Length: 357
Ligand code: SF4
Image (cartoon, rainbow, N blue to C red; front, side, top):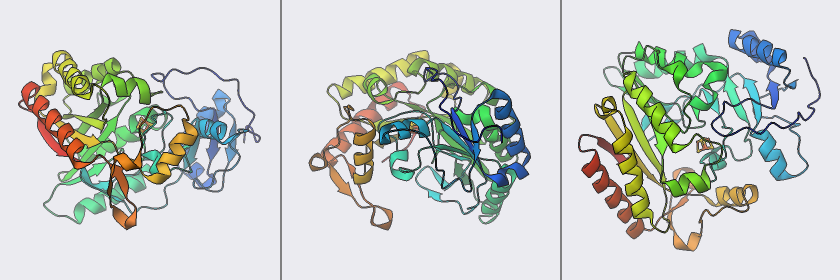
């Protein structure tokens, strides 16, 4: 390996909208048996980024940092190049039948991020180099449901657009699904780095969604992501490239002036979106939620956050394996849903709302 000890590189201030360049890299030896693993290894060696071998992408040790918060921030800037061994896909309701595991983790710092729950103790970014095996498995899942459409969600454990410049895996998955009569791909992003995906042969089998929110939420809770305007411009490019487009409005968050804030968001979307986007447009609405574990991690990692997480003001919703989460009480959830649905109907009468949850 080029470097065996992780020396701390001089910190470069990276604005959220810039492409993610890791500060530290770990490589699973097995990853070097795959062309993508070799390519990444050579590329990062040339760039002089500190690299170290790791026995497993699930047990990365040695990320520097004197405090837990520092370790967390450095982990977010760490890339692990690994092989996805578990090829059993999780289910991904309500947006898709399965989650397709192309990567895990994200370098951005959204305070409310669901990864605080899903991969709370392993916040580093993992990319998988056995892409063909993952796609072969997807094909098997499609074959198990003959004659029926099977949808795969590629953003359950990561923001796949934020790391696409490293692996090209998303484009491979898009083109693979383009060839599948009964396979469909979908993912969501808060990043605008879409150019490499515009010429993919998607065959309209991929729904490209952007996560959008009221100004208040983007400003206070989404550091490290692309701005609203950048996302909107990228959405226009994606629609012009013929992809079915979607917006996920999440997390819908109750703040002072939320009604005006969400109306403003939808009006800006309406006035600036290219006409091509209207042809096949969907919205997904997801209210803010948190788990007890995520709350304690969030408060530890973002101690000054304004994110409201008072259990006594929420409703407890039981979930899978007895793991519940806190959502808004019915009266607030219904108000959020009603306002968003009526504003979407007013401004985007031809769009489809897929669900509110
Ligand atoms: Fe999490 Fe998405 Fe924000 Fe990344 S961009 S931190 S995956 S919410």
